[in-house]
Image (tube, rainbow, N blue to C red; front, side):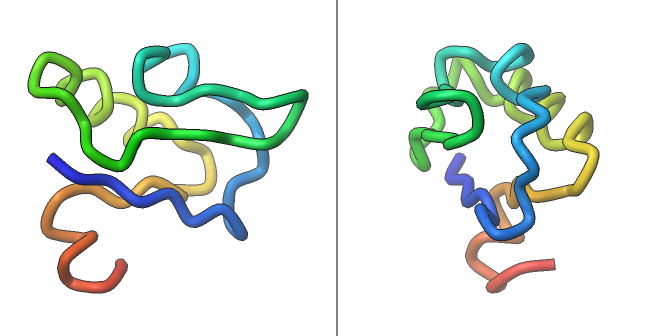
Length: 69
């Protein structure tokens, strides 16, 4: 699975960091870092993180290849 985070939309709520800490990381208090190639064992956690994002900034799989929402 591949992901893209719309960093202009991201507000740093960090729900993704709590739900998928092996994929998402905060640098400082607000800068989000992430691995766009999600390991197979983290796919469900990343799906949960995308669903929990208050601003829907995380794009998954087909959304990434389709160019967005």
